[in-house]
Image 1 (cartoon, rainbow, N blue to C red):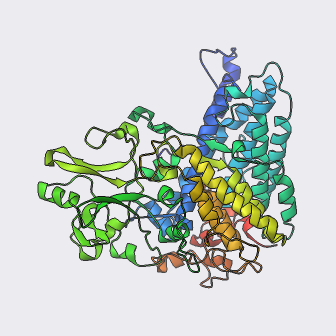
Image 2 (image 1 turned 120 degrees about the vertical axis):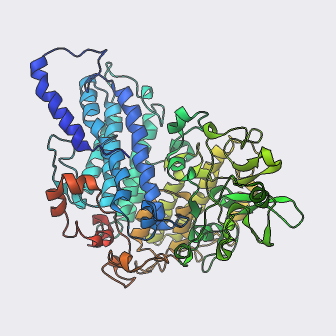
Length: 615
């Protein structure tokens, strides 16, 4: 991982400034510097790098929220799963923001002012606000007012300052997006990767973000759900208004960076598994659940081909790893192997040796009795096209993982179908209509208007399935795990016992469970869980909003050093933030230490960020 920081960028900038008077020459368009590139060129890179920050933040939040887990191990992300993150695991979102995104914003702003490119300026200001809001969501206190200036050891600002600063910057973005650009400015479409220059959609995104951020302060006395609803009148009104980063399944390794961030972070690893907590949401098998299978389940969770008693291959949905058990402290789940070291082992892999009708150990190839059934935990792994070869690519299927060994003459089978958001061409849903519906449902519910809440809750479920279908329609519909959700299946689910059918059945838990599914792999689920104190059940009279959720089973004495309370009703019992990475700790140590009384302590992980506290 690169160790650059915005501090290095500033040092280089200062050196360049020091030389400018001495050189005293005009800009040479053939020798680009920080003043030559036009806004369109800058914006494309800024949007791309920002999504890295956004999605990588979501990845880290997903380890905490129980969306995903891993096989046994002691790498950095394993420590997040244990609720005691290593400092090395906190670096990337910070670096993706400050080094690769934010460091480019001041020059973009200057060029926009020079050319009267107000739409570019508005988009840049929106990204500025969004990125710093993510930083305070993750880390709490952060350099903000001095962060992109010439001070290489900028002061830290508190969360409240950052929160309201981002809100103010978002308003400036809205104002500039509504202006008429000067004739000297490029059309926004020249650099816009998300909306092809459609300022109306950018304005809807801005209002969607404003509503999201207002909602985040739901613990504060000043919070007004009606204000959120008012803002949402100008937010996305259908899936046609969505903000989506689209990726491709690259056909060669040189284009690997064009694949989705969640594939790079998760889908390209053979270690990642679904958690039981998440699978219970999809299967409605949580405490009090209806046991009705959500039609999104085989799309959002992987399946593999197993051999049944009749010698026939059949798809079986993964089981979820129970993070509240001791499985990861007992060496499980074990990894699987794709290629065997001997003919005998390969045949045993591929013929589907049966332990019992429900278990097949072909994917784990372990001699440990306790671990022989671990193949029920199917990896979310999927290839990207550039990594495929004739050995493991049957037909035109371009991203499902296969066991294949032509030398042994054994037929191929699918190890994993992959999952919707973690494939190489999986979309990044940055701000979409389903979220708007669930925000409305929550706000109406808070206001006691349960009829409207029920309507928006159901709209959100349908909208997410239809949003998934927009991508699924691009795939060969003969491929299992990539087929569109039929309208009949959507209707059947919406009328089932899995979904509240009247006002009396609707609860905050039902709203937030469906929102969690629709926002899989995003930081917003981590934010929402903090707003409702996870499963404490002590927020107003909403009851337990996230049933069955708790500290991980491998939470140990070392983990406990990060939390100041053993009482679930105490906010310090729960995971509240990530500690700062080494860039600030080592290179801005005085300001970092002064930013929070527990800045250097392990307990910083349970110290709530500003919006996560009651007044």
